[in-house]
Image (cartoon, rainbow, N blue to C red):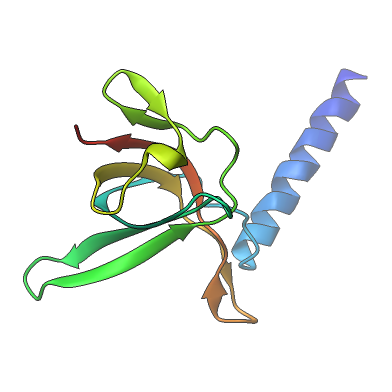
Length: 121
C-alpha cells in the first residue's frame, strides 16, 4: 500500500511539473514583497489596488490589484489586524503576495494572491 501511495504522489508531482513547464502553474512557488501605496479600495467588491515603484531611476510605477479578497484578509497595522474598511487611499503598505500565472493563450497574467499586508502607522 505504501508503494502505491508513493507512486501516486510521484505522479501528481510530475504532472504538476509538466503543467508548470507548459505555462499552466496556478502560482509561482515564491512569494514576492513590494512596498507601495494604496491607490484604490473597493470594500463592496473586496478589491484593493496598490501602486508601487518598479524603476526608481526613471520614476516608473505599476499597479497591482487584488480582487475578491476574503472576508478577513491578513492586513496588519501595528499589532492589530484590520479590514478593508480601515484602509485609506494613500496608506503606505508592504505587501507579500503570490504572483499570478501566465496564460500564453491570452498573453496575460491571472490574479495575484495576497498573503499578507502591513500598513505603516
